[in-house]
Image 1 (cartoon, one colour):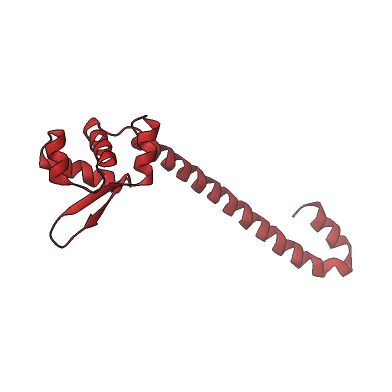
Image 2 (image 1 turned 45 degrees about the vertical axis):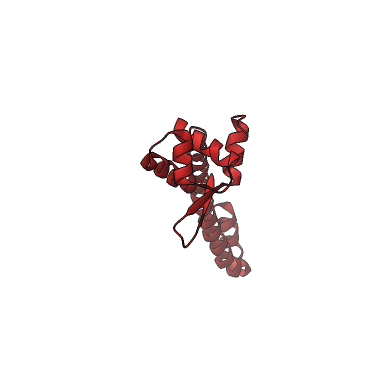
Length: 133
């Protein structure tokens, strides 16, 4: 506890303050531990965000072409994208799923089975950063 505790022991009427001081020191130690844990969590989140941005900045060439196509043809459907870019349907579907997962694009689903894809803000931001928009 330190010098304050020693001082309090010398003053008989200060015994009631000793309990409060011990409680405050325990609370202080707990808060310091929480602060250290939170600082580590912030650093982990910062690294995760940097990694996400790094991955975002490096879309595969075909995914980038798909993103450009969707920016120019809002509400595009997968077969239309595949035909226009001369890619297989499987490759287009793979990239569309990845672009949706990274929130570059989103989709509208219809009962007739058609899924239309459209650009979202991260996609616009990506294309703008690459000077493709």
